Image (cartoon, rainbow, N blue to C red; front, side, top):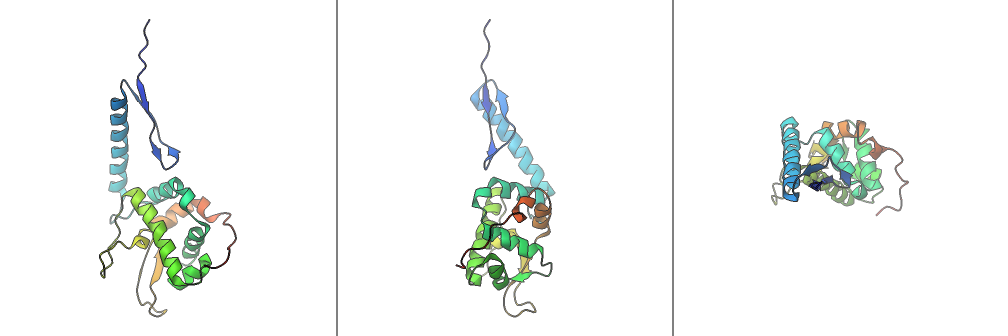
Length: 181
């Protein structure tokens, strides 16, 4: 008796294995996985409000890129979560252990970009150079609030939802700060 071998495709999201697919050929198994991923992505896009990634998408992106999420990123998210009125970049820097707001802006933007690229989100563009403001993936805000001329960031509800649910690990056991950079 002859047994057909078939093929199996195993997709991953970061390091997390997603449901595998089996088919008669490798090409067919890959096609089935692509269709499943396309359907998943279409459903996620349909759930978005004003194109902002959902809490579930954000939590999955944090998990998929866990190795890129630093203690400083986690401290900034924790500080924003605890400040419903928002924080300036200088306050974010202090929460993260950075000497100045420039480092906070850079690192917060890097985390925003990791999430945005993972979920296929394009944040608003900066008027001065038409480059994406990656921080807008995680927070919104406005310039020149009552705290002066600094930009004030407020954690997006979708990020707060992720941190209260599947991404709660982001707020627990954050290593102690090292020297301010």
